[in-house]
Length: 558
Image 1: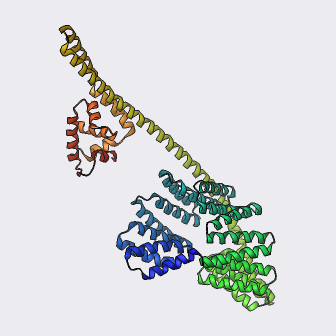
Image 2 (image 1 turned 30 degrees about the vertical axis):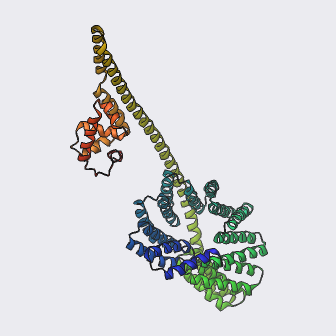
Image 3 (image 1 turned 135 degrees about the vertical axis):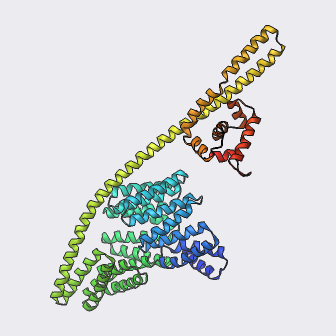
């Protein structure tokens, strides 16, 4: 057994003995992170317990983690509305906590739900919001995951060139930040796109590079995914022995991590390979094992696919009654799940089985249903392709609009930064000018005391000239004009919230807003430092600030 499985088993055992609430919450947090992908039903059960405990302990962060875990499980179980509810609740909780990385992750998960629902515009909006949070807090590492998800979105829209572009950018960020897991993931996704483009050479290269990284990093699940994909390429190239070897190794790894769906699908692939070689007994054994697991996992789509394969194989073996039983079950599941692709394939397979039984009336009925449903599917596919083309155009336009908006914001920020620098420069000029004039005034006044009468008169006249150059109101008008351009609503908000403030107190608040000391404020207003301190004292009283709240810090936040 792998370290990963041992870890899960250890946590389950630890959970069975632990009764302390905070410790139990800690164990449950670790457990849901490891089991969500492989066993969503079990994860839902333990996450519900964790959510209840977190609420009792008033642990908001833990509550958000469990809500997100429930949302992830809902995504896996295709309950997208339930997933959105849980993830939105987690996001609202996290908004009140200073954990931007978690906030960005939840918004990214919301984008994934919209993507899976086919609502690509809302998906892109959520991904962009997540990216903005990360960029705002300089968390470049998380950007790789968002770029990867946008790549998946374009892959689903069959825009492979765009998908490759985003996967490559995700790969670059992973390599830059030495995020080995992210690099392996991005390479696997690149391989998947090349596979869809029927570029087997590049696909195989990417999968093998990803496999090497995941082996070095002990990523068992990732290795299984890579090996399965490599096996499919070998199968397409007609190298059945190499394909079998890869799928068998993938199966063992899926067993190590106890991934039921992974095991079921891989058993199906191995069954298909044995059917190609004519080893039908082995093929049937693997397919039946896969069907049993898919039924256990309650995965209707995988179960339907495996039943179809079993039905076809049993027809090859002339086991027509058993073939019909499997195929009708596959048809029922496909109809219940709205899976039109499997539905028409089931009708075709049933028709062929009835032909083998010489029941041509029933064969004809299912052949007509096959043709009808297939035509509907092909028509819908054509409409979806047209819709995808329109949607790609809309998304491209939305990208352009966002880029224009981003550039305008950057321009505005640069403009505001320039104005802020200008305000700072002007403010310090006023402080330094008045300091210089006051210093000059004192020196002249001192010199006048020992001067003869004519010189004293000349010096006193010079002092009067200096006093006339200290124009407080003119200085303030110049400062206020520049201040309003940087802090447009500050004076209005302050006046509305505290209408009893005097004009001088409002001036002191504005000067505190630009981070001036009492001495500097005194220089601009041409008053004493003691006078400024008196204003600050009265301001604290009028603003009703507690003793532990700094006046300047409080004003900076307005």
